[in-house]
Length: 142
Image (cartoon, rainbow, N blue to C red):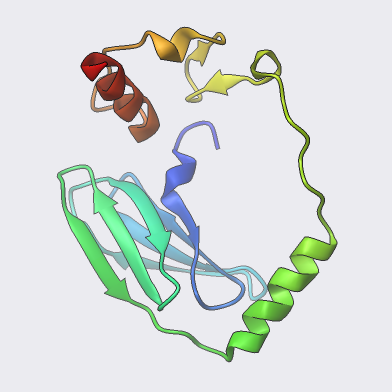
């Protein structure tokens, strides 16, 4: 969790499947219930920097080299299965209360920022997480 960005995890349209982007450019399909993982070589030589799934069944994969792929993974079961999973999830959770920023730990797994630090950061390297690179870029233009 501390070594790789949470932007590289996505639940796909198939219930019970988690997709994980890796620094080596692969995307891992993890079947949670079956406890089975399948590695798909997606971006050889380029780290996966962001991953998301669309409602229509595609997986969007972004690479460190600027590559953006749309992978069609399809839907394995009826929408009712997804609806039931969401209903069960919502029944077992509650809305988080408002959190004071002073109570949060802002970290990329290596460094920790104090509240307000991210408002002034203007430099980030390629090895920094994408959220920090974006924040630094936004701060440079304001």
